[in-house]
Length: 454
Image 1 (cartoon, rainbow, N blue to C red):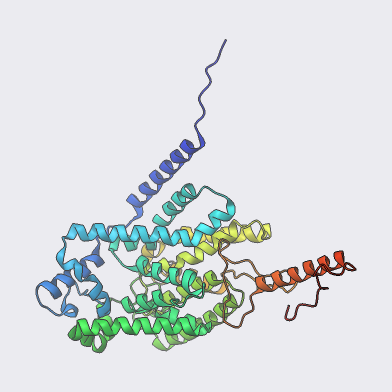
Image 2: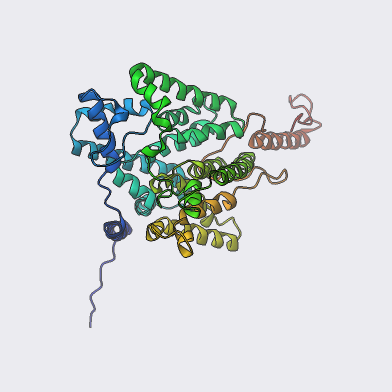
């Protein structure tokens, strides 16, 4: 009896079905887990622009009706957002979501694209799965649902550090400067450039931020005066530091000593954190591991900021990319690779879980750990995030955390080890060629000489 043979699905069709099924699961998770924030922050921006441009009010006097929340960004950010005053609310939502999605796709290409290339995976398939995982990541979904700008700032900084600063471009630092002028907290990356002795990039960043701020002051002098003399210092505009969404060190201290946080303890923790960060990023750049330097700085920016809401923690994404890189790198000891895969998986799942919200009114006992779960995780990552080891003289340069690109020199006085290796090989080749024809005068080949400086 003949049996019917089922036709086999083509690999491309099978992958499309896998992606569709995976995204159905992601969508179901988002429908259950994602908070309905109603684009609240976008509503703040939109209302403030309407109040400022169309009704002639002071932008920093505007509050969302029925709330104490108003516009808190520098005037340069306000200048960039003025087109909102001329479009409809639903158009503003569509533009916000589209910009966040496109920026996130580019960020993922920069962070995990080299790993996909190294592994030989099909790019569209791997990126579709990666984007689904990131869509479920709580800081990302919160940023999109709030209509926040965090992903756009991450885009500016990651692109600047990995493409311009690392590549030695004269424009290196411009993205960091723009991000700092939009929202002050990315200014920690200017400090990063200083600590790692990229003086030119640091100068470009500072000059870009200053120029953008000056341009905004020319465009809106009254708003600039109010922001720099009053609104910037008014902490009541952003909410309580003990609120569970604040996963900075200030939130940890505030919940630990609620309702009377110990500011001296907070300052001490900030100083210790900055010292650990400076030591680790100097080590990262000495090892020419720019992605680790970027990740560590993103972590410390969230930790030392007076307020870091959960949607600000998109800066943890580079750390997760590093753990993913190690977990898939077969050149690493299998046991270490497995341990880092477990750590990365735990960190990702925790940051998808909304754990702190389960303890929003309980800050003692188990609640002390649960309400501070994300800041405790960031402390662990700051201390333990892996960094590529510096090159050994006998084995050549250390492998970059971005295997698809050359990291370039970390600082101006670091020798180019790849160039030295090339010159040494050329010297030995020339020596062998000379030995092969020695004793044949007139052919124009001179005996090889030692390579000076090799």
